[in-house]
Length: 206
Image (cartoon, rainbow, N blue to C red; front, side, top):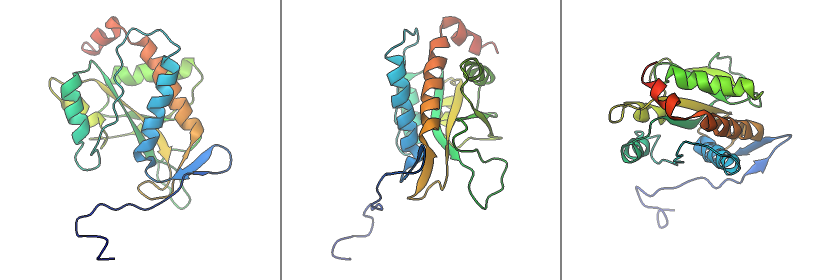
């Protein structure tokens, strides 16, 4: 092995993608490939819709080691508002924690100081109006997602977080449900339809 691998070389586990029963799926790095899948789903919906907002879909790097990609991307784009798409810790056998979110019951919508109240209110309304199930995720401090650097970059950006329930996070056998990804993508697209100048101006007055 020493002839093949040097100190400092990047390595990863070889793991295939698996379709499980129903709409459950398993594989590695769903954190945050699931987020990219949500963005893709959202853009598919938006391609059939007429929206007023300019949309920037960003797949950031180095979130796990310092939220760096989101910091530089936010400086470059200077958005009026931002939504971080990430995974949330999913319910699993042997864990009884109220912060966990169930798979196949819709995406999680975070609440806490990292979240702009009007952004959360708007997402909840869109979900309710369109029969999209969602769950509440309590983030009492820094969320640990790209929403944090977005919120505090430059003069500040109103942010929200949409979380995909993910079981066995940070392992090579993470489990998500494809329905949650589809719901999150649709929710995000329908939310974007509601974003206009008055909405953006209202964020500063909330």
